[in-house]
Figure (cartoon, rainbow, N blue to C red):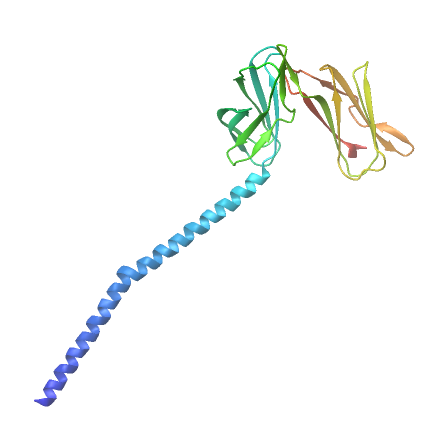
Length: 251
């Protein structure tokens, strides 16, 4: 009798151990493992978000835009904004600001593409400057390269009119001449330049100009190809600053 009772107790203990193990495994599969899977999924989502933010920051830093603002008519109330995407990634313009007034946009501009936004109607106030900028979807703000527009005596004025000459250069000495026939201005390198050269000439009259770029070769200056280069201002129907890019290494 004693032997049978001991055997039964051992069997009951064995059954209890098996049931306990099965209950533990059930709890493990129904609570712990799903929780671990959820935590792992949360970590994966967090890692993906961090990566997306890093990519967005990188793309944000790659945005490079030139903005020009100009009135549709010298005496009118409408303003247009020219946006040139000089960066390597597409941009999306989501807002245009003219002082404290903003205009919603949804304009995508590919790399190396230029688009004209507007016209935007402006409430004109005598003697007021109008500062213009754009906002992109990535959070960048770009102000007008041409500066503020100024309205006085029923007429629009630009902060300045100018010609920016950009010489692609790996080494050389240059002379630049800007003239409209009755006016001229010159620039001469003080020595041999080893970087690209950027020179801006401020002009007064929105008329036709001619740019001549010469590079020193031996003991004399030689014109670069396609000189003189003609520039036609269309202000106020076009940007007040015109960029001229020439390759100094063509000689």
